[in-house]
Image 1 (cartoon, rainbow, N blue to C red):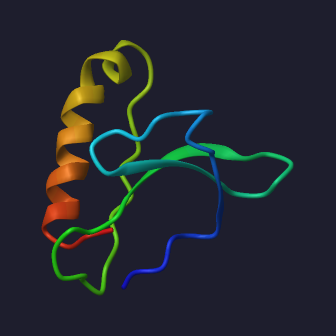
Image 2 (cartoon, rainbow, N blue to C red):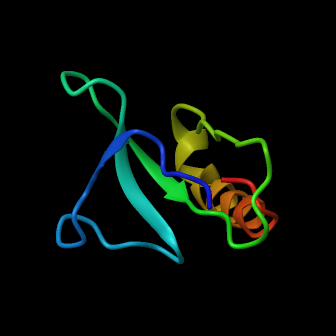
Length: 79
């Protein structure tokens, strides 16, 4: 099993999960960053993938594509 990254988990009442993804905070407590953890649903790989969204209007229009990409990577075993 792949361990979850060192992070503070947002409680379910704070933010609902989306299709197996879990909202988390990563980084130092004084400057946390919001992130989504997609646990691998297949056999776990030895590598992980971090997807960083673009800025501006591209972030708005690319959100769905990035989520689908993250779900596909998780299904292939990449956390």
